[in-house]
Length: 264
Image (tube, rainbow, N blue to C red; front, side, top):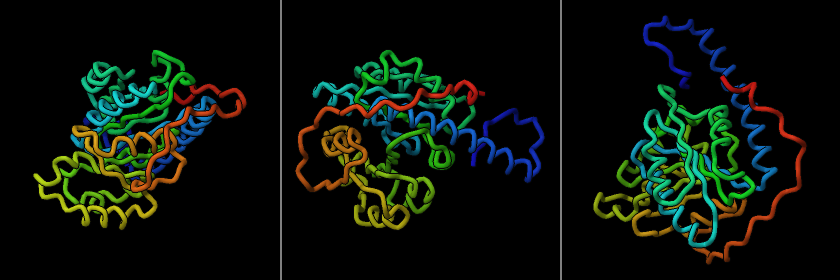
């Protein structure tokens, strides 16, 4: 597990202290996740935690998804986590997607306190959105342990990464509700073996649904959009998709407790 990074000159904590510190960080984050999940449910908002290794195509996929949803009158917003720069957030904004960047510095994952602060910077209230995606830091290790209050955890596997990537990083794939095989337009060029990839996913994430998509060609985008907008619905990629219906708001919940205490 990755802890918040500090100066490399500091002495390393003793093992027992390190374990206690890690547990405290996760417990604090879990409390924040429960509050965020309550808030998202109150607004009837589907929220996706999107994870992958660097370069798997998260931002390109969200650019294309944003355009597709806008064409249907759906409103997408993205919270973009990265170690440094707001380049990805700018790309999404240029594609017409409301995007708020989070620069984590040396921290290799997002936490609920970061997400809570970013929510206040969105240009519209959550109740006006149809979908919120949290684009996590490109990393297949640290983010696996951090719940961000999402309804759906999506892990991308690019065809350029190799079919055995789920076997090398089992924890994050095991935590996935949906595995998206991205850049499938390049599958033939890189001799991607679909059956091996699907077998590897099934070995470590037997409960996860799997979709193959291409941000370039648009292949699989309709099925992906339907899944993200209705995260609790069963997925059958081979079945015809029903028209996307407006989201019905959930009944109001009790007032949300402040997240201020969770912020560092």
